[in-house]
Image 1: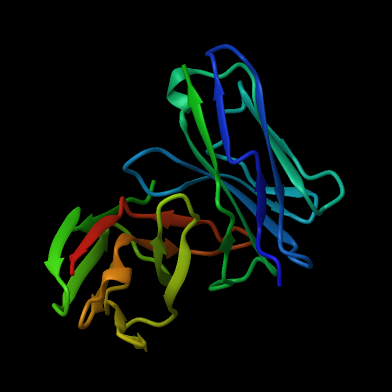
Image 2 (image 1 turned 180 degrees about the horizontal axis):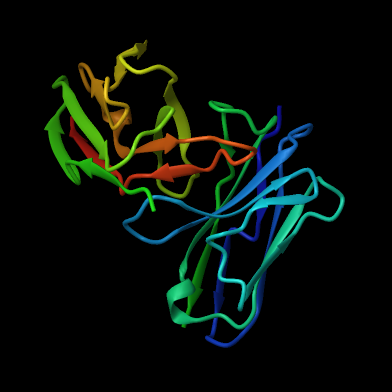
Length: 115
Length: 113
């Protein structure tokens, strides 16, 4: 079974530029998550989708970050404009559903460096 | 918001030694999970705990869900070089459709062959 796919794996941009990340979850997984992992920290949830609807985006900096999952399958996360503090690994995860204890499977992440 | 305190921050041990790490929270969780993250990869689930007091093993790994629901520990017995990585605890509260994970800061484990 294919895992969670993410692209690109690495991205270097200058501050104030825009960037987009793509995630393809495991086939059949209804729930998709975007996490931000700053160096030396654990992942922090940015947004959770259930199919194509947003369940939780309370920690998403909405003035510059946006995410969509239009057809309820793959998803894109965009940052516009980027700041230096956005340098981090952006992890996508998916799970079959949204139940307590449902296993979340993580992709390899996109490493973003903002100069 | 909920915060997890994970300790130790890092460990350097000899191959064959046992390892113990723990996680405490200021508030309760309904599920505790332990993940391992290798360089350049996403976290991989090692053990999930669903009930207070539960003790679960997965090979050389043993984890427990604290009675107060505010803490958990992970033990690794007879460590081997491939145990190297960052170990994260994560708590899940649940409620409605929100099952986000709250992660600790991680324990970096280095195993000297």
